[in-house]
Structure formats: structure tokens, C-alpha cells
Length: 148
Image (cartoon, rainbow, N blue to C red; front, side):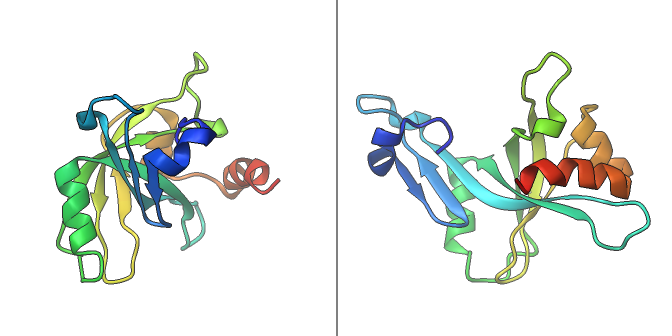
């Protein structure tokens, strides 16, 4: 998971459907442990009430992750955190072929709801799409490869 060699995952990765901790390789610095929460990225679709939704992983500070984990079974709608979204979606590669890493705000939800993220003011295509919305045809272009 997240570029950890398969033979090291059992030792280095703790993951559920909503939480993930990735420890550094043996002998590495524990400060390099990364913390992730599963969130929803919504992109409005013109002419519909329902947005295009992606379940994505967002990095968190250790403090935010622990606060989220400890209050997971409660209403968290008054809380949130900063995170980084590693964009590994074919439709949203940078023009130079690299993948962006974008700042975002996670808005935690009510009990049993996944947080939703808002990308912070950037000019990558995915930020423009979240801000301005996309057409139904664009949504289908994004979704079709993901269904195969």
C-alpha cells in the first residue's frame, strides 16, 4: 500500500477501510511514519444534484489522525484538519506527466460519515473541476477507465 513493498506490508502497514498508518522500513526513523484517513472528494456535475464522488486517502499529522481516531464514533461535524492529497488519478496528471500533491482541508462529518475534502486554492485541473464543476460527459470520461 502506498509504495510499500508487498513483503513488508504486514509489518509496516496498519489499515482499515477508514484509517491507515505506514511505518518506515526497519531501522528507519519513526518520525517518518505517515498517517492517512479515507475521505470523499466531491466534484460538482453540471445539471445534476449529485456530485461525482471519489473515495481517496489524505495524509494527516499524527495529532490530527489521533484526534480523528479517538472521536471516530462520535459526531465530528464541528472538527476538521489540514491534509495532503496525493493525486494518482489518470485524468489529473500534471502536463509534465507527474502527479500533483495538493493541500486540502478535511471537513469531518457526523457519526458514521466520511470526511469531505476541499482542495486549497491551486490551479491544477482537479482544483478547477472541484471549484467550477464538470459536464456529465467529463464525468463519464473520468469514471469509465475506473470501472474496468
